[in-house]
Image (cartoon, rainbow, N blue to C red; front, side, top):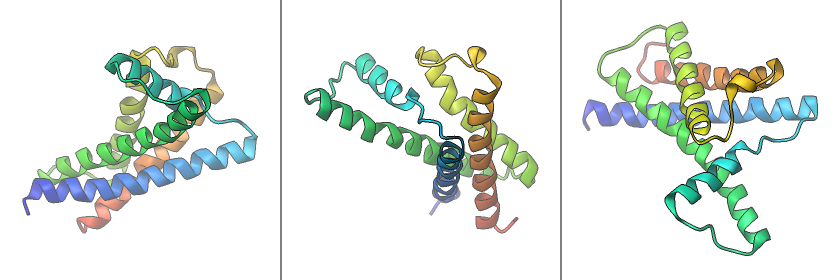
Length: 158
């Protein structure tokens, strides 16, 4: 197996672990603060389907259920995909320590998820309150830490 493919697979595993950490931190925050979930994932699915010209079928309830099912899948795909990208970069020999790796993975996750939603007009980080930033940065930092730790562990540098 080529080094790039092996890196992509290792990264996908690391991204899946990071995504699990992100979700756990998010759900814990929701439970502790009693806050509801964000509508941005569902809004993103709707907007992407509109842009693609693909109708999500079903009556209002069924369509809503489908959107609720597709929304978290986009987050999983993003997390695994970004992890895969990070794994491919590591497979080229670019390997930094845990602090740099965590920072890079966190930044990639923040930009890779919020960037498209900002471009689509779903959210505007410039208008976020401090609590909104904390609710976004902390889970993404958990993603970055776990993704970086798994990548380091899989290639024997952690």
